[in-house]
Length: 432
Image (cartoon, rainbow, N blue to C red; front, side, top):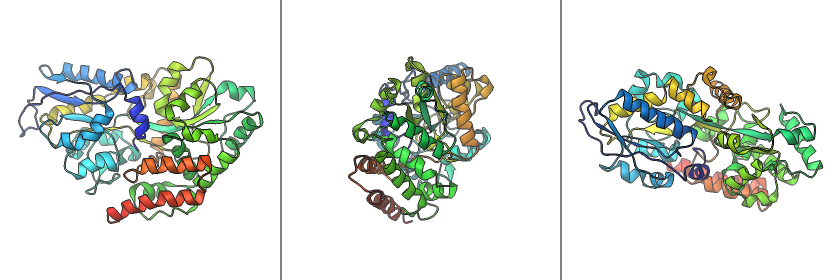
């Protein structure tokens, strides 16, 4: 999903949204408008918030006489009311919105979003986005991502990685693993020393992303396209998902994952890692800036899940232009500014993952490592999206299912049956 509904809601609790009343004519798509209505829900101190505030400043400088007004809104407020708002005269001119079939795809299918294909080609946005990133920006007539027209433009990315406590690795003379077998031996060493290796949040998105990463260990791009984009039927008892479920259950039985983690939320998982209680945490780049700021008592680092060529991750959320926007030309200009070298570099130097930055302009070694790993994944078509994207409501299905694997109430076989049913029902609803 986007970054998991729970994670995004947490990060956006102190959100900022920009709104106003647009003006201008339709013939030139509002080129003469004097007000830009812009909503986003990133915190002002987040990497995205910092970069986009700079983009607003640059926009004002290049558009004298144009006003950008705003009011504060929350992520859930926009998420829950987007269809109603965008179908009214209160629609903003441009807004940040979640990527995926059940969000931006649904709005595009309903005719509520402007087709940005021509602008993406003319302004070169398409050349700045890898195929993996374009997948979340394009939607077909059924609102299914991966092909069709551009209905949004992402200017940052995100991916899942392994965070590790260097001090604890050094204590037990452990090196960063380069294969899954080596990773398993690292975790065995911690268990022998009565240390639970993995910080896990089973009550929200983190645990299902471990399951998905394990499935990807046996998967390829064809598997991802079948699972995420419905290219072909998915066998839920096939080698990929079976390996993911069985190995996850094995990790619980071996003590890599605590059974208590079934009730742990993502926030508590992250805090436990910052406190040095666990040597390893598997989660997303959205934690990176926070860890850089908050972890003071030990050295830490990251590495990609060893052995895999595919990892959970995607573009960030999208800039979309509502069909009822009264200042479309201004909205296109604003998107262009967010893709500019200056704003992309600021995003990267603030702890974010820009999609089009010159890495040489990133000064902090940790931030540079974060971006270089993302560029490696994106450039090699290694972003596999998120496990809960394929069907509406699938996030909750996966949370409950993986919790069952953690607490032992479900066998891997029963878990796979449980998650197959709503997936297949969604395909039936789409006529596929």
